[in-house]
Length: 410
Image (cartoon, rainbow, N blue to C red):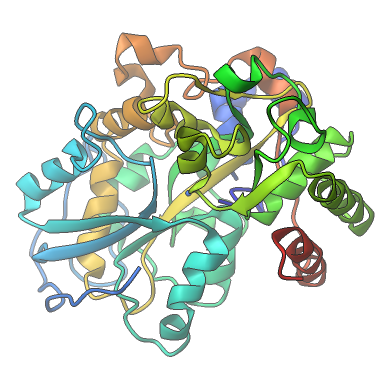
C-alpha cells in the first residue's frame, strides 16, 4: 500500500502547540490529510426516508436525488487484515453481518487490493469507458484517491445517505484540498509503515538498517513493499532525508540505497501485502510492514513484531470510494454511513489496530485496546512520524520510473 498523502503536511510544531490537534492520534489523522468483477442485481429503487445520523444530527440536504432502498448485493474491495473478524475465524466479519441484518444486503467483501497501482489497473478500462467496474466500494490511499477523483472516476455522495459521515468524521479529516467537504471519499483507517520482523530470527530490531545492510539471519530474507512512497520514504529516512520534501536527488539516493541492498544479497523480494505470508512461513525475516497487518499476523505467528524505527516511519490514510458507474451506489452510501457509527467503527479498530477517523469511537474501545500505540500512538512517537510530500505529475513519473528498477521492471 502506498499509503502516503497529497495533503499539506501538518507540522509537529502545530501538534505540540495544542489547539485542535492536542492528541497524536489526531495529528496522525491530519497527516493522512490498504479481483474479478461479479454480476450484480439491478440498481436500487428510491426510498422516501433518509437514514438518521447516529448522534441525531440533521444531515446536509440531498443533492443527488432521494435516499436509496438497499440492494440485494454489494461488492466491497479492500486490503487484507483490514476488517473485524470473529475470534480467529478470518472469514467471519461481525460488522458485515450487522449490516446484512439491518438492510438484508449480502455484502461480497473481498480482500483483493494488494497495491494501489495494481488494483486500479484491473478497473481502469471500465472507469475510462464509464462502465461498471464490478465494485461498489473500493478502499484506496489518499494519493490514488486524489488521482481518481481528479479524473472524474468517483461518484459524489448523496448527503442524505451518509448523515453519520457528515456528523461524525473527525475534524482533521475534513477539507483536504483534493476533495473539499469529503464529497467523494470517506476515510477508512490511518496507519503506519515501519519495520516488521520475526524476533525469533532477528532478536529485537530498532533501526531501518535491517532493511538495507547485510546481517546475520536476515541477508536474503528481507522484503520491500511495491508501493513507491512507502519504500522510498523509508529509504529516505534511513539516509536522514525528509520524505515530506521529496525531490529527484532524494529519490536517486533512496533508489541507489535499495539497489545496493539488492546487489549485496540483502533483499529477497519486492511485494505487496503478501509479505505477511512470507514472514509467517519463514521465507522472510524482515520486511517493510504496515502496522495493523503485523498485529493480525501475530495471530498465526506470535514471534512477529512491528516497530516504529529509530529513524522513523511513514503515515497514510485509506479511503472508501464509489467508482463511477457502480451498480449499487445508494447501498454503498448506506454501508459507508454504517461504518461511521462510532460503535461499528470501534468494533473494527479493536480488531485491526489502525486509527479510526470516527468521532466517539476511541472511547468505545475495549479497555485492553484503548492504550494500543497503533490505535492511539504515544506522544513520544510524534517526532518520528513522517508523511510523503506532494509530487508534481512530472516528478511522480520520474519517481515511479526510478522505483521500477527496484521492483525489477525498469
